[in-house]
Each structure stands twice: as structure tokens, then as C-alpha cells.
Image 1 (cartoon, rainbow, N blue to C red):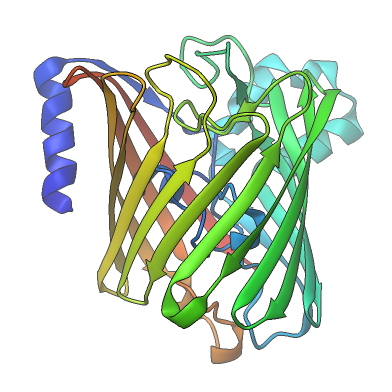
Image 2: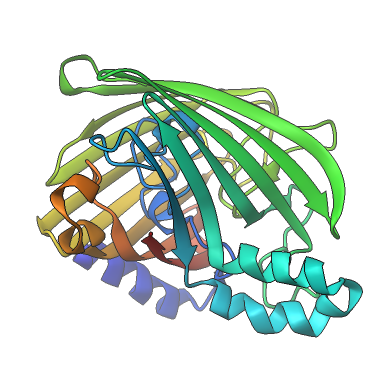
Length: 329
């Protein structure tokens, strides 16, 4: 996977295509690096998943408690916020906005039910191609979603989740969406199913390669082990000729040592001659630093980096990079 990462970087230099850093979106590095094929995978609240059943906010042993996730990406967004948006906000609103830049989520659990709030997650619309580009004149919180996620641990082999997203544009309400899903674990293989419904104003994407559709249903399978993970995902797609439209997706993760995760993935666009190649690295499992009862059942990388290259007819045309720096309290 390290060789794949080097190949992607060398390809970028050879063809000299444009790179877009997705630094204002803090939770997408793992998802991007695994080709967005995470619908049947479990991950901490510091990651992004289209399936709300995949979030793991608490260790299995903790029956009651409160926790939160801090994100370091807020330091990259702070200057932009004060330069372009803060003067339009009251002092109390500024405090809430800045808190949302550094606090990704707050979660509470009692027995088999847990609720989490994701404070401010930047999003983009289909017709807003430059939302995360350096050329965009829109500030960090020009458009974002605030989410309420509910997790139900029905059985040790069944996890159910639901999510409501409240969208905002220029700090004004812009509709609500919802999703719900389930991850089943029969005999070690994980099967994920989830449904997404966006508001009438259209889908919101977490990054340019997200490409979820309104009223979309996604089916996923995964083999998730402590040392390796294999995942495949297929989304019910509508008619489109867009190059970046993701259809079948696949991803893999390998941990040669506990402090390092190597990731790769990709997708073929069946409605065009496009393709997507992804890779990434995760560093330092936070479970190393936690007591046994406070460890998650899955690795919880403190720092993750992701890279993706979009191809058209075999030629790279666009590259994306992103990182996630997060710590669960």
C-alpha cells in the first residue's frame, strides 16, 4: 500500500494535474482512503460514515457515560472564519461557531442506547464544485450540517443507527435530511444496509467524491479484523453521466503494527470511462494510551491521511488530499 501511495504521488507529478486539499472537512480521511466503501465498517466518532449504524462512540464495557471528540483541523479553519464570517455573528454565536470547529461530537450512553451530536460538519452541494477549493471565496461555515445520531445495540451481532441532519447555509436553516441503517455480523462477516434521504433542496456531500444521491440505498459487506479489513459497497444510483459518480466501491486496510494502518481503495464508474484510486495512512492507535475499560473494540487512529486521484479514460484529471487529527475524551 505504501508503493501504491508512491505511485499515486508520482502520477500526479508526471501529469501535473490540479490538487485540492480538503482540510476544512475533518472526519473524512479514513473514508476517502478506503474508496468510500465504509458502509459496513465500524469506526469511532472521529470518522465519517454514510451508515449511522457504523459509529462507535463508547467502549462496549461502558454502560453509562458521556464523552466527546476533539478535532485538530479547527486550527486550520480559525483564521478563515474570523477573516470572512465572524463580523456577522454575535459574541455568543462566535463562541458556538469556534467550539464547533474544535469539538466534533458529544455523546451520551445509558445501557443499550447512545445519542451523539455532531456540531458542525462542512458540506457541499452538487453544483458547488469549488466548495473546498482554495479558489472558493466561501468561508468554512458557509454551508454545514448539524447532526443528531442515535445508536441502538440491539444484540452483539446487530447494531442499528439513525441520523437526522440539519443543514445551514450562511447560518440560516436550509432543510433537514435523515438516514437509518443496520450492520449485521453473522459468523464474522459484516453486512451493512442504509438508506439516505436529503431535503428537497438536494443532496449534500462531505467531499467532492462523496456523490450520495437523494433517496439512495446502499448495501455493503466487510471483513473487519484487528490486523486487516476488506470492504465492498454498492450504491443504488440514479441516471447520471458525471465522471465522479461513485457506483461500486472497494477498500482495504492493513495494520502491520498497531501504530500504523495502511489503506487503499477505489471505484469504477460504470456510466463513464472514469475511475478512482485512493490510498492513505493512519498513525497511532489511541487505545494504546487508554485503560482497558476505556478502549474501543476497533482501532482509533489519532492522525489519518488520505489521498485520491480521479481518472478519465485512464488519465488522471484531479487529485484530493485530506487529513484527520482527533482525540476522544
